[in-house]
Length: 327
Length: 289
Image 1 (spheres, helix red, strand yellow):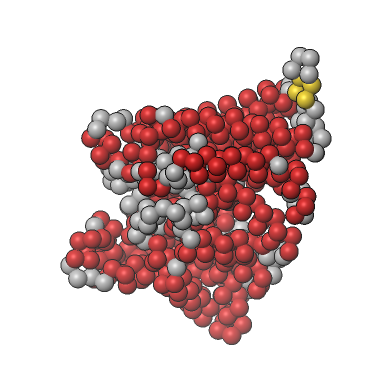
Image 2 (cartoon, one colour; image 1 turned 120 degrees about the vertical axis):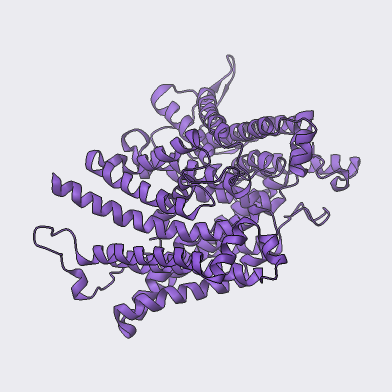
């Protein structure tokens, strides 16, 4: 499932590639067994999966289409609020809440994407930031409906019934982790399928040389719009999982600093690689968890990490193998 | 009622003036260097805190002059040490860099000056209301608006009539050609960044007198400044000026009618502009793509 980037030189040979893939899934499946040994807790692994999925969704746009969104927290947060509001006000059903949240975030992204597809580079980024903050502001000030600054409480994930079988994910243990992992696996498989399809290859073509892609007759704006929309759907799905994970949705899930975290996850792991954002999310979540437990000045250290990654490590952990000049 | 409206109009002018100073600095840096400076609000806070620290020694007027210059000096250091390394890279890196920088500066300010708000002392003359009937308009408010007007006129005059201003304007349009003509573009960008930080520092000193100091005092101004730039039209400084005034006034006047919608209006203007006039009020076609 690893996707070739920038030509096939970045690609591992077939057998090691398959081995790496098996390795990733074994590590993810075995989390409940090895994480406690290292002093971690399963909810931390859940957070890695959720943020990893959000960052991988963003990376479809950032790494594979070459379009810079710095506002993806908006769709993540809309997913979280969509799921939370559904559970609280409408229906006590986990699948419906996930559907509602994903649709809310995804459709908001689709509509907004239409307005900004002609922008490029930092201007595109600036529009996404400003639009993202709109939702933060809305969740923050619509106190009676969203819980305002304190966040949306009073909802919790519900057991899922499959007719004869009921999956009880309400506990904090491994069942919910495997539920998250299953959703993650389906989403990631779909993402891999999209990126390997002719459509996905066209996105890479646009990233590599937009003008040439245009001369080849590719409708560039349409592709960027679709890529933006699909990416928002994935990030919104991750947002719904975030709400389920915490039984809580807060305005910080919509804030542009979270957008920045998603982007640094992609860059840290390697934004030209398929699995990079997951690796970046793991590193970032663990670092943040560790630093904020050590010092109240955690913002300083997070900021320093951003600066160091940009200045000295721009191609990310999985990007080291790649040739220079793509950064 | 007339007083309420007058009160909010002056408020709008003042808020708009802050948006304008912030947004002009951001816009200068964006136009010449293609960098969105997330840390701009933190340079504003730095300017305020420096004035707070310096005013016992230099007095208010001295601090008002010196601390924006010091902020600009810090800007020079930051640009030389970090930002100039990423000019030729994908814009994602400049965003992440200034984003990290914002965290570092904000937390450093919190560490040095403490997390709680600090009051900024003002000279007695500025703290008085101008007349008894207009008790809500202090001389300080008039003074702030006057300083901003002088700064903005000074900026535009410098860009129009000085050699370095000409180079900045030319560089905005075509940096490569400017470099080919023998201009030291590296120094030009450093200088331009410093001017942006100078404006942020100046707004910081002014804002400190109005709302006091706290480590994230610039954060609330950052997003409206982005919106002012988009609304006014990327690439046009006059547009940024109009955008800042427009959203400042709109927000303040909405406060008269329906206070809790004052921020919503800013976003409504943003959406309207993106829908109806994507290049912004005074933006050039193609400048944003």
